[in-house]
Amino acid sequence: MNTYNRYLLLIGSAIGLSIVQSCTNLDEEVSDQIPQELYGKNPEQLETLVGPLYGGLAGYFGNYHDLNTTTDEQIVPTRGGDWKDGDAWKRLYQHTWSPSTDDGRFNGLWTFVYNNVTSINQQLANPAITTDKTIVAQLKTLRAFYHYIAMDNFGNVIIAEQLGGESPAQKSRPEVYAYVEKELLANLPDLPETVGGAQYGRMNKYVAHMILAKMYLNAQVYTGTPQWAKAIEQCDLIISSGKFSLPANFLSTFSVTNETSPEIILATPFDNSKKGGMNIEMKTLHYANQLTYNLNQAPWNGFATLAEFYNSFEEKDVRKKMWIVGPQFKADGSPLLDDGVHLTFTPEIPQFEMPAGIVARSAGARSQKYEIQRNNSSADQDNDFVIFRLGDVILMRGEAHFRNGNTALALEDFNTIRTLRGVDPFTTLTEDMILAERGRELAWECHRRQDLIRFGKFTSARKFKDASPETRILFPIPQSQLSLNPNLKQNPGY
Image (tube, rainbow, N blue to C red):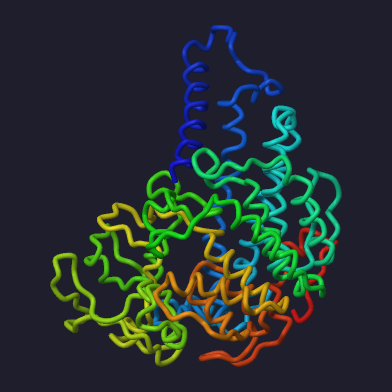
């Protein structure tokens, strides 16, 4: 949050100075303009070129959080006429989306990736950038991260390293995997080891290790060849660095001021007035919860979790506090009413499409994992969205140990997390237990789709959803992109 504010101030100052200088006297010859080829020669100017490239990461939350509705941990049921939206949310949840009807949904993620890649490529062609090997390494790592996102979600995608030219060729998923791995390993030596401060929200060695760890953990899905030992190695490099630690308070990593969390490896900064977009509380809270938190507008009463997912948490599990259930109250402690009835959130959602009424409006556990900002004058919050954190790394290493045949080491990692969360340690371990524990730890952090695919559960039947074709593990190449690039071919099953 604070880092992004600094970007904005620097950019705003540069623009403001330019305006003042150019408007003082239109007849004067301006002697202190900076030629484009010389701009970026000092740290302040360089920051105005690099800072906005990290600002582009803000779209991660909006795209990923909506598409998390394709999993078993998040649902947007129809509440009377609310959230009907042409059955768009139902199609996401039930895996019945189509490339044409839902083009905007998938094109949003695609353009988030490649628009940011284009911006990075523009700056990598700038002589002011290319003279700084650290910044070049950071930008190439950021570009590799976007290609990783494209590969994970769409499979066979394009590799965009240059500006202009002919329409790029579509590459196979293993080819993109190899490209991302090569880029990360090649640039790792020049990446900074500093975390936090000016490096908060930016690429460093540990972000690169994390992307590689994610790649290797899912390598069997991406390439057909497992890479468990490599996943362990990358996780070890993060854990043994001593740069990150697990806070005693689980929810502090998601607080309004979470930029101070010692656990965060990568987050995308938000600010309720200068960089909006973090509006998770508006999506999940009931309209009347405006009075609970003294918000300046009513929330939208949409996103919830299913009873089956909520009930996977033990009562003594401190992570269960991420959910809001039971009677609701105003900020002054008096009952919060809906149609004259005391509003009470129930974990059970009786049906996906519910008739209008109090039952529909109160169905489903709501999320407060990201602290709800009280007395907020905006629909947007100050919490930064956490992309990578240490708790995930420990569970990833534990899973890789398990799959690599070392259950004893796997148990150590899983019980490190479980003990801190207030639940009994595991004495044995199965794939189902691993997937469930990852669900409890990482709920609504947008890792669930990838996890379910790795465990072969993404297309399985669940409440309100029949089994879906295996081809749904990949999202469709957006119809808009197929029209623009004749080299792109649609994924199988669409």
